[in-house]
Amino acid sequence: MKDNKLLKIEELARQTVEDKLNQLTERKKRLDKYRPLPPALVKNLEDWFKVELTYTSNAIEGNTLTRQETALVVEKGITVEGKSLQEHLEAINHAQALEFIKALVKKKREELIEADILAIHKIMLAKIDDTNAGKYRTVSVRIAGSTVIIPNALKVPDLMSGFVKWLNQPNADHAIKIAADAHYRLVSIHPFVDGNGRTARLMMNLLLMQEGYPPALIRKEDRRRYINSIEQGQLGGDLKDYYKIVSEAVERSLDIYLEALEPKETKEGVKINKLLKIGELAKETGETVCTIRFWTKEGLLTVKDFTKGGYQLYEPSMAEQVKEIRRLQNKERLTIAEIKERLKSRLDFV
Image: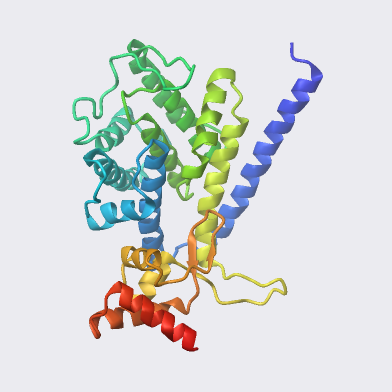
């Protein structure tokens, strides 16, 4: 029997998780008030999330493509010098898998089947490992650097059948907890030779999107916390830290949507000009997101602030600078270095 002190600690942990989930429910209600969302905003955010989710999910697994390089591969189909073919394919495949789960969002959780999970995995490993793509493992595996014991391969089909039965049954838990539990259960079964983490994160995001939540963004910088929290649950059954990380990831995504819809306020409550996300700046100027990223990287555009998730925000005045950069390129045929010098000279004169 557990002593009273331990029981009180566990009860407090449950209350903390429940309080956080209630807060996220209120955030989603704020977002729901704006539905249906403007089509242009939806497209911009979906394009941004496609790159960001692909970058972060692959980075967690060790892919070395940067955020900008991932955008080039996903949006432009450009090969990045010095990066492996597998890293390129991981980016392409993840972006395609995201498109696939958008179709599955039309289903209900109770209607998902094993074939859906296998299809997601098959896309993830296409042209990387076609032998094992979309197939359960038949060999034993271990997680590098971990003492967690993975289920025997012979048990995987039954475990996956049980997973889907659990997924399909009525569940009164909060939608975010169900999605988090699905991720944890799937990654703990470890049904595939490779691609378990990416498939589990896509599964979690599919369940969130089915309930009207944006996909959860687990950042690269949270990689160690995230992995440790899963291992902590697998070794001792304590999922408090894991639920916290998933809740933070959902909150981050909700805030990205709300920040795009709700103007910022000063301390006095006066509305101020809303800073532009990269997709909004691209739409306003008729440029691509990749172009804006490149010009920012080259120092032609200035980032004013960052969201809670660490993403760039621009002053509305940057729209005019974007147009000026394009004019200098097209009309005066200036190089990037020459444009940079011209812009610097103009600012120094002012």
